[in-house]
Amino acid sequence: MVLIVYPWTERYFGGFGDMFTATAVLNNSKVAAQGKVVLKALDRAVKNMDNIKGTYAALSRMHYEKLNVDPDNFRLLADCITITVACKLKGDLSPQTQATWQKFLSVVVEAMGSQYS
Image (cartoon, rainbow, N blue to C red; front, side, top):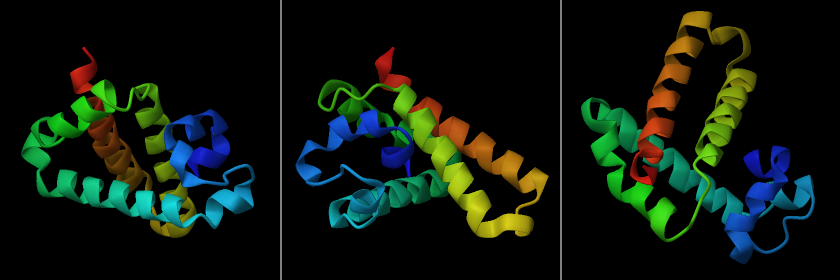
Protein backbone atom coordinates (compact mmCIF):
# COMPACT_ATOMS: atom_id res chain seq x y z
CA MET A 1 0.00 0.00 0.00
CA VAL A 2 2.81 2.44 0.83
CA LEU A 3 4.18 2.09 -2.71
CA ILE A 4 0.79 3.10 -4.10
CA VAL A 5 -0.07 5.93 -1.70
CA TYR A 6 3.48 7.33 -1.60
CA PRO A 7 4.91 6.50 -5.04
CA TRP A 8 8.26 8.19 -4.35
CA THR A 9 9.07 5.29 -2.01
CA GLU A 10 9.49 3.13 -5.12
CA ARG A 11 13.03 4.53 -5.48
CA TYR A 12 14.18 2.11 -2.78
CA PHE A 13 12.96 -0.87 -4.79
CA GLY A 14 14.61 -0.31 -8.17
CA GLY A 15 15.15 -4.02 -8.75
CA PHE A 16 11.50 -4.91 -8.27
CA GLY A 17 10.50 -4.34 -11.90
CA ASP A 18 7.24 -2.76 -13.05
CA MET A 19 5.65 -0.66 -10.34
CA PHE A 20 4.16 2.07 -12.50
CA THR A 21 0.54 1.40 -11.63
CA ALA A 22 -1.35 0.25 -8.55
CA THR A 23 -2.23 -2.98 -10.34
CA ALA A 24 1.42 -3.63 -11.14
CA VAL A 25 2.39 -3.07 -7.49
CA LEU A 26 -0.39 -5.32 -6.21
CA ASN A 27 0.60 -8.11 -8.61
CA ASN A 28 4.37 -7.82 -8.11
CA SER A 29 5.79 -10.96 -6.49
CA LYS A 30 8.84 -9.07 -5.18
CA VAL A 31 6.58 -6.57 -3.44
CA ALA A 32 4.63 -9.45 -1.89
CA ALA A 33 7.87 -11.07 -0.72
CA GLN A 34 9.02 -7.77 0.81
CA GLY A 35 5.68 -7.52 2.61
CA LYS A 36 6.36 -10.91 4.18
CA VAL A 37 9.79 -9.68 5.29
CA VAL A 38 8.17 -6.65 6.96
CA LEU A 39 5.56 -8.80 8.71
CA LYS A 40 8.24 -11.19 9.97
CA ALA A 41 10.17 -8.20 11.31
CA LEU A 42 7.04 -7.02 13.12
CA ASP A 43 6.69 -10.52 14.57
CA ARG A 44 10.25 -10.21 15.90
CA ALA A 45 9.24 -6.96 17.60
CA VAL A 46 6.24 -8.66 19.21
CA LYS A 47 8.49 -11.45 20.48
CA ASN A 48 11.00 -8.91 21.86
CA MET A 49 8.69 -6.28 23.33
CA ASP A 50 11.15 -5.47 26.11
CA ASN A 51 13.94 -4.63 23.67
CA ILE A 52 12.53 -3.58 20.31
CA LYS A 53 15.25 -0.96 19.86
CA GLY A 54 17.99 -3.55 20.37
CA THR A 55 16.18 -6.08 18.21
CA TYR A 56 16.05 -3.58 15.35
CA ALA A 57 19.51 -1.99 15.80
CA ALA A 58 21.17 -3.87 12.92
CA LEU A 59 18.15 -3.42 10.67
CA SER A 60 18.06 0.30 11.42
CA ARG A 61 21.79 0.60 10.71
CA MET A 62 21.38 -1.23 7.37
CA HIS A 63 18.54 1.09 6.32
CA TYR A 64 20.64 4.12 7.30
CA GLU A 65 24.10 3.16 6.07
CA LYS A 66 23.49 0.89 3.09
CA LEU A 67 19.98 1.59 1.82
CA ASN A 68 19.87 5.33 2.61
CA VAL A 69 16.18 5.16 3.46
CA ASP A 70 14.57 8.37 4.67
CA PRO A 71 13.46 7.49 8.22
CA ASP A 72 10.11 9.22 7.70
CA ASN A 73 9.22 6.32 5.40
CA PHE A 74 8.95 4.06 8.45
CA ARG A 75 6.16 6.26 9.78
CA LEU A 76 4.42 6.25 6.40
CA LEU A 77 4.59 2.47 6.29
CA ALA A 78 3.26 2.20 9.85
CA ASP A 79 0.33 4.44 8.92
CA CYS A 80 -0.45 2.28 5.88
CA ILE A 81 -0.24 -0.89 7.94
CA THR A 82 -2.64 0.60 10.50
CA ILE A 83 -5.12 1.57 7.80
CA THR A 84 -4.89 -1.90 6.22
CA VAL A 85 -5.47 -3.62 9.56
CA ALA A 86 -8.44 -1.32 10.26
CA CYS A 87 -9.95 -2.06 6.84
CA LYS A 88 -9.56 -5.81 7.33
CA LEU A 89 -10.89 -5.91 10.90
CA LYS A 90 -13.53 -3.19 10.52
CA GLY A 91 -15.80 -3.18 13.58
CA ASP A 92 -13.69 -5.79 15.33
CA LEU A 93 -10.94 -3.21 15.84
CA SER A 94 -11.90 -1.36 19.00
CA PRO A 95 -10.54 2.13 19.66
CA GLN A 96 -8.46 0.71 22.53
CA THR A 97 -6.98 -2.01 20.32
CA GLN A 98 -6.22 0.50 17.59
CA ALA A 99 -4.52 2.81 20.09
CA THR A 100 -2.42 -0.10 21.37
CA TRP A 101 -1.51 -1.13 17.81
CA GLN A 102 -0.51 2.42 16.91
CA LYS A 103 1.59 2.73 20.06
CA PHE A 104 3.36 -0.53 19.19
CA LEU A 105 4.06 0.66 15.66
CA SER A 106 5.34 4.02 16.94
CA VAL A 107 7.89 2.12 19.06
CA VAL A 108 8.88 0.12 15.98
CA VAL A 109 9.23 3.33 13.93
CA GLU A 110 11.36 4.88 16.65
CA ALA A 111 13.55 1.76 16.78
CA MET A 112 13.96 1.76 13.01
CA GLY A 113 15.12 5.37 13.17
CA SER A 114 17.43 4.84 16.14
CA GLN A 115 20.66 4.54 14.13
CA TYR A 116 19.99 7.78 12.24
CA SER A 117 21.05 10.02 15.13
